[in-house]
Image (cartoon, rainbow, N blue to C red; front, side):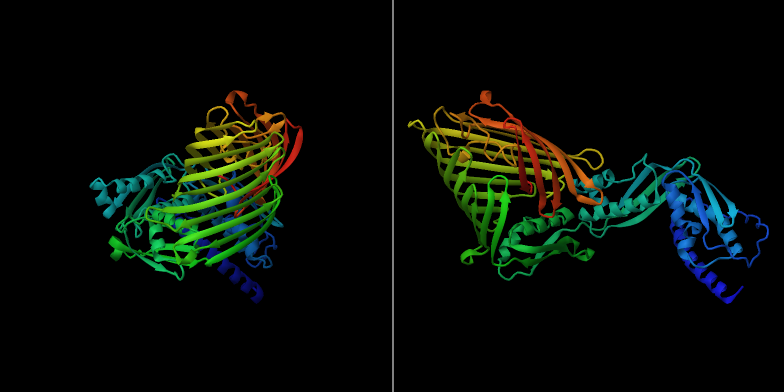
Length: 627
């Protein structure tokens, strides 16, 4: 053999055996696998000698069902030959040796997919160029017959004592195990299941948990597997002192109030993630991480380290944009995160739009014990629609609670509104006690695709109105409003979103409450195909706000192309209207289609909708999800 050829062969063998050793090591981890001896080498083709060089391209033909074909093509040495040595010929003897080793390699690969009784045949189809055919009959796939669980350490002791938290941790471990009886056994799935279960046990507060033992017993005759897993839980970690890092301008007390747990609380992953999310949502920090010390020696009171990056003390934001509801707009927002050196945030926002001009201001305390916040706010607003102009002023004071899934707001509000249209001028004022609540259980709060969101508003108060007809009325009133939203994947890459909105003002005839307490429909978040606040009861052809509201929407969407998964198309149907009484409500219909871009700040929607009642088409733009 010439020196160049010998060198090429040595380089090829070194690379090939490195890959083969990795495969054999993986297969050795599978219990119950017998050592397979390669079959005798096939007879040497006529005319071939040890020094004969095979042509460059050795062709491999695999006949196997489904995904097994690509598995063998990619990982058999014969399949990798060209990639390993694309420009180096090999001897005929080396090619025969690879053919002889192929059945054992193929069976080892098939065992990782759960096929422990495969039949493999290898034949040389042609010699010039060399073409090898590998035919596989995998046989039945091995199925998980049983999973035998074992737990040792403090978790087992707590289970014996009937501890509810320990029972919940074990139940979650077994319920979420991804290889229950009846599922196909695959080596990769077995490895992922063990990793995932251990991660879940650690997330339950047993941060030092390890596997005491794991094994898979394979019965190749009956094609089933029994999985044995025994966890060593280690101690349950409980929270100790907070170590806060990175504070310069904000108060440490705020950070401690946002923790909302006492020393000695089980340090579960969810507890720490919820705390981290509250810090990020507080509006005071641009980054926050929460970690514990996982040394078992400090498990009874593990230090909780909070690392923070503070936002600037003051921020001013200028914005230019366009809204399908209110037209082109400019906004200016100013935030002071520690006004007058106190633990409070002051926000002021000014909006100048074609159809809306407004100022909104709010003074909010930083987090108090129990995740509560005190607030004082006000609004001045002018809104123009096709038929009227509404000016309003509101002042409120109250207390908010921001939870993980539930937000609550209780406040007292005084409001005055003036409506001008072709009927004249109407003025209404009210003093009310209000309770708002938002509950959500979604997979992603910014880009939901699965879950439910519910918003509820209630109010009771006293109102007085000077009506269009010159009459004056006063008396008590009540208001109720609810919006239910539902997101659900339906099949592969299809997503549904539905919405139902209901509202009613309970008031005696002739008494008008302020316009913001009443209802209209139409616009981006209402009935598409109609203008903003275009739908409602009419007097002499003039649309005004009503005492009852119903809107509903159904939408289905999917990605436009797998290459751009964040760009979706959608089609939808909207229906609804506002009226003075339920018996007078005549739903308007809107249908259309649009595109969605799932940006990091929320979905950006562009819709084209047709309104049946107006027989017109409107363009709608919207950003984000409103719960």
